[in-house]
Structure formats: C-alpha cells, structure tokens
Image (cartoon, rainbow, N blue to C red; front, side, top):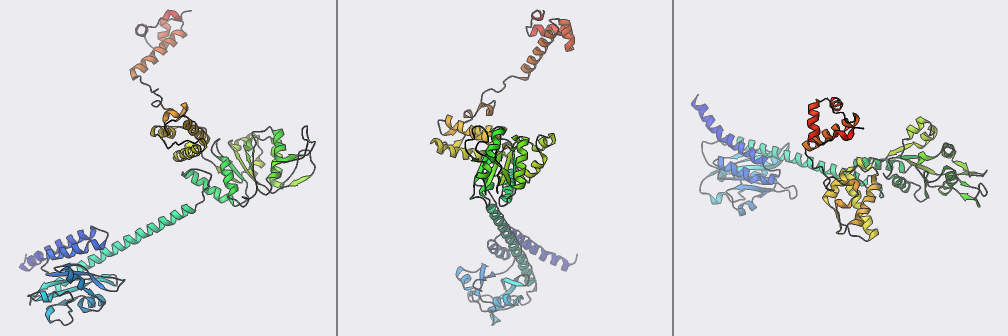
Length: 516
C-alpha cells in the first residue's frame, strides 16, 4: 500500500466516524430543533474548527438566525441574524452556493456580526455551505478554521456539504412524517365527524357493530315510505326500531299507532284494525274507527304479524295494494295513507313454505327487512344497557345504585340471555330492589345467571371420586336388569365374576335386594 493511500485512509476514518455520529444524532429526535446543537458539537469534536454556526431561515420574519453554535457566547449568537444577501452567510443562503474564505481579515464582504475577528489573535479561515431542501435553501452551515497558507479548504467544504445534505434529508423526512401525521389527524377528524353525523336513534342503546349496521338501515329507510319488516327474537327491541323509523321520517308529526296482533283473537283483531259499523255484531252499539283510520297520514306498527289468520292476511294485502278497505259490517270504502311497519319473531319464510302465511303478503311486507341481533351477539352492549337501566330505575325508585360489581359483570357477560334486552332490564330492576349498599352484586342476580363459584355449588369431587360413582351406578343398573344375577350382570358389563364380586364388596352393594 502506497504512502498516499495510507494517508487517505487515516483522513477518511475520522470523517466516517463524524458522519456516523451525525446520522445517529439526526435519528434521535423528530424535532429538528433538538438535533442542531448536537450536530455542531459533533463537528467541533471531530475537526479542528474554532467556531461553528448553523442557521435556519425564519419564514415569519424573513431573517436567517443562528440556531446552534460552537465557541460563541449567547450575546454573539443573538447578533448573528442576517437578511438574505447580507454578508457571506446571507449571500450563501440567497445564491445556494458554498463560499470559502482563506483569510477573513482580508475579506471586505465578511461582516463579522458575531464579533469573532475582534476576539481572536490568530488568523481564521471561513467555510459556509447552504442547507438545501430540493431547490430551496433553508439555512447554512459554517465553520471557522485556523489559517493555513497551504490549505485550499476544498476538503472542509466537501465535508460540510455532505453534512448539510444529511441535515436537509432529515428535515425532509421530518416534514414528510409531519405531513403524514397531519394527514392521519385530518383523516381521523373526518372519520370522527362522519361517526358524529352518522344516524343514531336516540331511543336505542348500543354501540356494537351489529347495532351500527341496524342504525345505518334505519337511517336509510326512515325518510322513505317503504314498508319495513323488523325481524328478531322476543325482547330485542323491535318496537323501539319502529318508533325510531317513524319519528325520524317525514311523517313524524303524524300519528304512530301500535297493534299487537298476538294480543287479540282474530275475530276482534279485524275490528281493531279496520273498525266496525253500528250493529255489525253483538255489542257494536256505535260506529268505531279502526287503527288504520286512526293512523291515517302516519305510521301503523303491526307487531307479531306472523300470528294473523289467513282470512285477515287477505284483507291486509288489499290495504297494502289498494290503500283502501271497508269497516266490519260496512259497505263504504275507506281510503287511507298509512305507512306499514311490521315485526315478527317467527321465520316467516318457513311459514310461507308451509303454506300458513301468504307468499304475496310476505313479499309486500318484506320490502325493506331489518334483522335485530339477539343480545348474545352484541355482548359489548350489555354493560352500556345495564348502566342505562340503572339510571332509569334510580329515577323511578328513588335509588342511588352507583355501580355493578366485577363478579356480577362477569356473570352477565357469560350468560346467554334468551330473553334478550327485556330479560336484562328485568334482571337489573330486580337486583336494584335487592341491593342495600348501592352496588349490584352477583348474589342479587337471578339464579339462572349464577355461576358455580358465585352460588358456592362448584363440583368439589376429584376424578377418582367421580369415576367411582359412575362405576357404582353402572353395577347397580346391571344388577337391576339381571334381577340380582351376579354372573349375568358381570357378563353384561364385560368383566369377570371375580371382579364383579370385588366391586360389589367395595361399594357395599347388596345384590339380593334386586332379586324379585
């Protein structure tokens, strides 16, 4: 290896160490203001510079200010404020080109705003390079070096340009990260705004995804006059959904009439829906309007629609198609403008297939179906619903129940809730009547919700005890079947008579009691 090559390696190693250290500094913080001072300090530790400054452009004031410095007092830093084109620093910023000065004492354009020349007895050289972000200059990096007549400052200028480029890349990465972060914040704000504006009925509790899907459907159909079929198990809140549709519709200021089709026999239900004329049947002492007429202009909610007879299905189909009907015992046709919302806990498709529910009526009712999920499919709503019911019954019963104990919450979350929201409401009301310390505990919940641990009925038997009980029961059953015949009992169990005798003796079983 030549002497020139060895000299080059010795020179490059400190530079590589400096660049590695600066790279680590730039990665240490997302705020560029946190790293400028350490960068200048690192340059001072790896080079022979006497002083060094790093300036950044302030877009607000238009000035170029010293952000970090080595070898300068705080007063000198404050003096180092330049305008674009002012002095060497201002010129480098304005032109975007590096400047090297062999002797600053002989350079007339060197303004010396920081007062470095006045405080030094030695002659200094000066190198200043731009920090560029694309085509824009955002600052400068400069060093003061001891004057050397044989030194042309090219190497120092090259090294500073590399460092300035690294800093520019760091700034760009930070700008990109900040833009991405702002974009995410803007997107999050937009989504939050969407969620805030998203339709949510005031009368229904629940934030689960299953309920959010229902809210979307309710919001989509409310402003129309479409017939809605609400399906779901008993206690899921079908009536609440019908109310939400009506009171968010264009008919909200018109009547909302409810009819439970399962609560009346079909003979009375027809009169209830369509009304009757005076003398139409025994007890019809006056003309009476039905629910369709009372709901004219508004909404009629028919709950448990699957319970109506086929004769009544025909009349209901006519109202849906023609928007007209006759009262029971009457000849005059009554025209109505009523929106129909129906609900059922039955699988109407199955009844259509069986022929117990008219397919043409089903298709008329099933224009816009909404399926309400059972409570077991929206467990994340259980605690929110429970808290809602606590607030409700606190007001009704002048109670002050403040919380639900953790074991009670665990029990509610583990239960399958066959009665859905209605069952949960009843459980909370019962528990609030039982509690005496303003807390709902596990033992306040009904027996159906009790766990083995809460009710102290956990199985404490060991595996050996359980196996012994099973074996004893099998032997007794075999003796019963064979009327106390030990040989036949042993054969039916697939064991020898000797083992049968040992087991009978072990469990103190008297085979004679099973003989007839």
